[in-house]
Length: 111
Image (cartoon, rainbow, N blue to C red):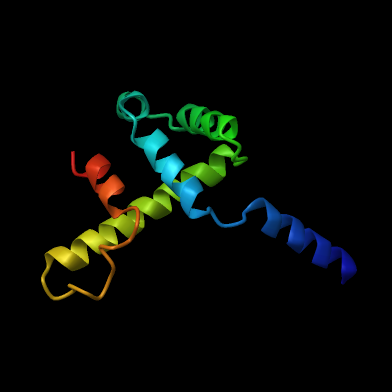
């Protein structure tokens, strides 16, 4: 029991939630023309995720390329959900275009 407890906390520690400032920086880096261009030109995303992980690390945020990939996927998912619910009229106010990262995500994804 004790052992499974420590394994669980280890996993929890590794995938602690992204903080707001960390998310903001990740979006900026991911949205940069350099990275967007790389993603556009390649089918293999893993090397790009490694670059992002290294860039985040330089800024003091230690994440695996996989965590970054998952975070970006979740951000895109959230963005599209907000976009859909605000555009179809019915959903105005049900989700939050005040989501702090909406504008930054919109600038990247509506291109």
